[in-house]
Length: 380
Figure 1 (cartoon, rainbow, N blue to C red):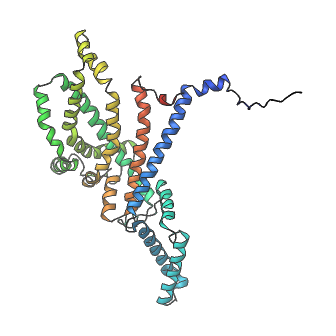
Figure 2 (cartoon, rainbow, N blue to C red):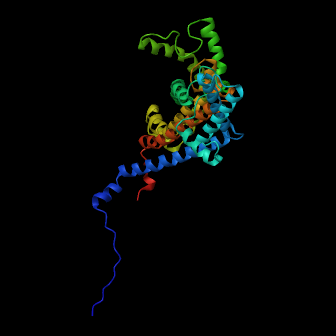
Figure 3 (cartoon, one colour):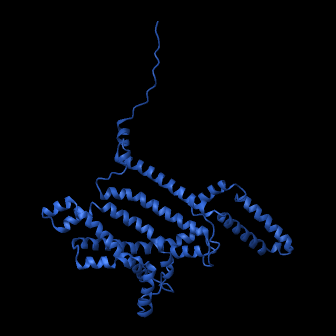
């Protein structure tokens, strides 16, 4: 008599090639990137949804959509020659029927929770309709077009001024950290309170001096009017208009930035390994490059990247003073006209820039610091 023994099915073992791929650096980085992107995207979605919820308090979003429907419907009926012979009451009744039909088509008769999901989808794709409350130069344009047209100008101003400000202040701070207590060191400390004034404050004086009195630079704008015909002249015109606003941003933050980095480098200069390197007779520049600047690169890069994307948020008044056609002056007009779609769109662009920057910083850390391994915490 024989008995059959039941054995549990065993899962097929992974081949050596599969194990090698799963443990490879490429797969580890790929997995980490996917998880990181998903996490950041969820964070952005939550932030945008909260923005929509806050903006809709009091029915702002619904009011915007209803106003747009009412305006478009009224204009289309009044401009249609087929309805010209109708009485005013009949026209009004027809307008109300079409408005109700359009609101039903767009789901405005549904609960807010259902509508908020649709608002979220439209907001994430910048499908925010038209700028209905702003001045006539924007009123006929889609919000997405307005924001994407103005974004490059703001990034140009923010990127140029921040690059000069950051690298200039870092190298000057390194030099001052070697000359602690010198005349220039004390002068920097004395002038650091001047950074309490915003960029537009210095911008007004720069306009008065270089545009009104000496007349060597333009008052504002992005390019000459009429624009130059050749590409080289067009670029030179933009650079000429960029000098004053970028200088205002740099002057307003230069001394405080130098003072902050100078203090930061002084703290690292007192570390034991730096003192040992000096005792071994290494040149001062080698000590700074290897033992002060290199260990602090992750912090330096973090400050630079985050400042670049946050600096343009404070350009609202600065761009208005210089008539710089960027997101700052657009946001200023939107706030004045209570144009909520433009305000929400600017917030979404900021959230996207912040998420992309945080994602890229992880890989930059791995490039500048060998101790950092991307995705090493998830390795099996």
